[in-house]
Image (cartoon, rainbow, N blue to C red; front, side):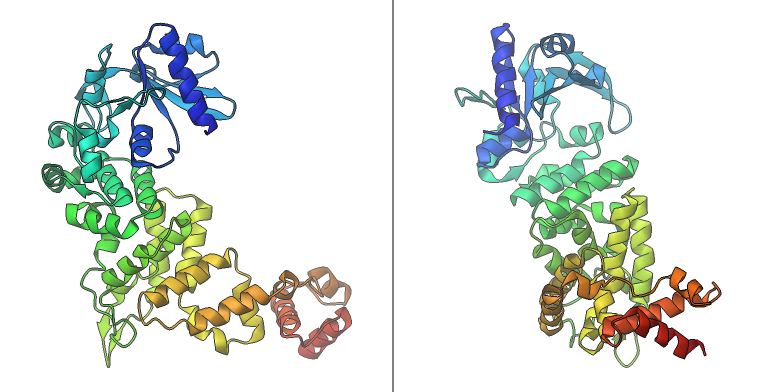
Length: 435
């Protein structure tokens, strides 16, 4: 039993001992009923926030009027939520009025999907289900509670959440719920970039990424949140290199092969060919001249728009910028190859290239060559201690200037090639070039 579950059970027990109603609720119940290990636990209760705060001093109250208290104990955190009803949503996210309730039925009605509205007694295993969530779980259905249009009017992000849950669990979206998303998908533009980013990240990394993007396309949401990716549809590729079909099909195949990847690898896969649609042309064959360079620019715009961190953006851009270099690894000079292999998080470059090959021509020759060289290279072989520094050049009588970096790079290249091994050999090389 995890610390979070232990804490959640102790909270339910304590609240009940004080005469309150308390249940597990939400995603943890859904996951438990599906046989999955919950990532976190929520408790729903008729106790008011101030009562919860008195029972667990030092807890954090988030959104006072929403009745949410974060109880922190022993390195675990559990969200304790007072039963509530909500009315008059004003901006596609925030309710204009919140009322605390004692009847759990009213609390359930404000939730998003039936599978997330089941309550569970953690001690007896009894499930309280007012909306048919267990039936939908068994049938593999994502169904909005009550009127789907009203649920999506309350919080537009629920449209992306429907896609995420369907993709993650391999479920289908119930027809009326799907129709409501297809009618209202443009409303997602009113949601903050940060909230959209979090949903897209989870679609890409929690499992079922291909299904997720197929559903984004089917619902109409893809054009709203990632028009650059939607533009991949119907963009033909040279059949000798891409027998699988257009850029969209190729990208879907790569997404299908992802297995809970890092955020940066997932986005690298999604965006590695984002520059192809605007660079498409037909000469003697289909060509995408400059698609890598343009793809880097486009990827930066997309990830900046979605408010990713500078570190994450940098790694994704490196993946996009370097994904075509594998085609030349066997012809690279030793120094150039070693510089390539020592790029930060090179494992992600390898993983992207492998997926790229398997989702197109299937030839893994260059991948195997790069993998073998990467795994067999000692760190000091890829990044040996420098034989010379700028201070050494100054001490040798050279004046600082633009040529310094060129000379130092030349020395490092020779060192990586194995042509020189000592400081004296490095200085002699510099003297021979600077005469």
